[in-house]
Image 1 (tube, rainbow, N blue to C red):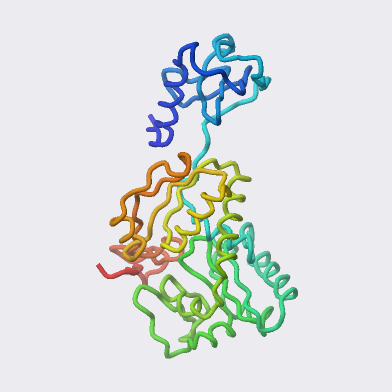
Image 2 (cartoon, one colour):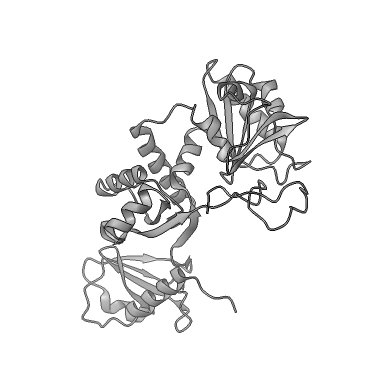
Length: 339
């Protein structure tokens, strides 16, 4: 038997509760009828109708019982057998990163090395010489062969622009020779703690893991405050288009929390967010000092979690293991923060 997530259990409890509201409850603004309603509640797994008042579900049950909530101005929506489910939650995302990916070079869906390079080449042709080209979303797992891209790949199509492209997991990136030169990364550059500069024949090949990414990232022009807010809103709109009603934002800096708060206050955020603060650091310290935010902004925002990262990711071979990787015998990963 599959155990329901806490979110699904909560939704199920809500739907069970509202199904028993008495007939003298408030009149519904909208009633959905003739639906195939999946409640997630084992005691009442299916229903026909949903009554809504002021953006809140006040009843779930049969068409006949829903009539008790019908008034002269109630809007009736005939679902004609369509399926309705509780809202879906994206249980792990980085909302600013999603927006930044959409605003720069989105490399999702590049299923081959050739697709990846073609997208980069197209962006190079649209970009002024010497301007940075950044992007995110590539993953080599299904490429043939499934090998990381290299600076040599990028140098062929981007000889004059610094290029920095982050892997889908956010724990690795590839840079071309121009970007490596700006970052002063050469044969003698030591690996930083919690990171690795991958090499081929004793030369940096462009792949940077975890904390080594910062060697290049610190040289990329920082986004303005307006651009950061736009990244948040763009990320949110992307999530909404995918059908998510709620997200769990897996880590945020204090400055990002301030942007999120302003956006909610201005009525610009259309979904619910469970937000985590990055730690250790000022974001975690502020949460510990000020306490949790529960159901803020009309029940749309909760923050009570601290996220701490201690190692890399399995896909980029940075996750710390007790034994070497089966396909990379010279590495067992590494810690990214001191214990």
